[in-house]
Every structure is written in structure tokens, then in C-alpha cells.
Image (tube, rainbow, N blue to C red; front, top):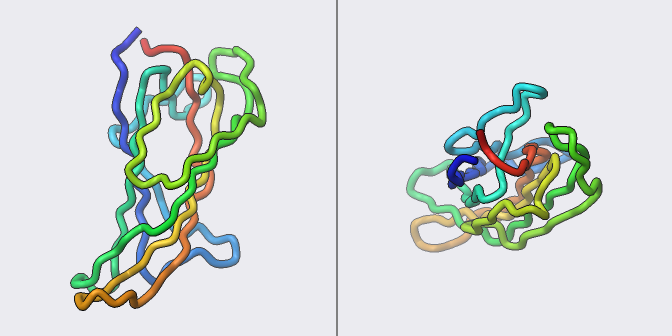
Length: 150
């Protein structure tokens, strides 16, 4: 069994590129990058690993600031683990808000999960005036949560 790993999942987004008509308006990245299963090339997290969520927005004017004002994380278990064990399909977990939250993978996290992150961000000028409030959506990053590392 390997030592737990502390991951950060950063959601990147840009002012002026909000969600509309089912478009992907944000991207996400794990740091460090989790290992991938040799069986299916899916990212693997292990029981005991943690994931901290953060957001990184880019205003169109560099003197402006951005604040995530509302966020939601919804994860749904999609099925069987890479090691062949059954997982409770359809199990859902929700976290609100997401920004700065750290979750720990536990035995009840086992399974192949897809998750979405949706959020609203305010872009503020130097005087403190909100110049735009935009909705963003990051669909379906996936992770396979297993019982232990190598």
C-alpha cells in the first residue's frame, strides 16, 4: 500500500467565455497528475488520497479581479472498478460550495466516478464594481477510486 497523495483539482475559466447552449466553458487539471490504470487508461485515486478544489479565472482586463460566488460539485458512480469489483452504480455525492474544499477518498468512495463542476463568478473592476457575473460548467472528468496503491 502506498502513502496517500494530496491532489489539487484546478478549474480554469476565462471572462467572456461563459456556459451557453451545452458548451464546455471551463477546463480542469489534477496536480500532480494521478496515475492511469494500465487496463483502461483511466485516472486512479486510492482510498486515503485527498483532492482539494480550487478555481483560477482570467479577467479580460488584468487589473480586474475574479471571485467564485457559487459553486457545486456533483459526482455519480458509473460502475465497476478497474480491479473488477462491483461499485454502487448511481450513487451520487454533492458538495456546495466547492472552492477550497478538500475531500478524502474513503471506502464508500470506491468506484468509477464522473463529476461535474458548475459555478458562477463575478468579475470586478479596480473600483470594486461588478462588471460581469458569468456561469461556467466543467462536465465529466472521471476517476476510478480503488482500495490502495502499488
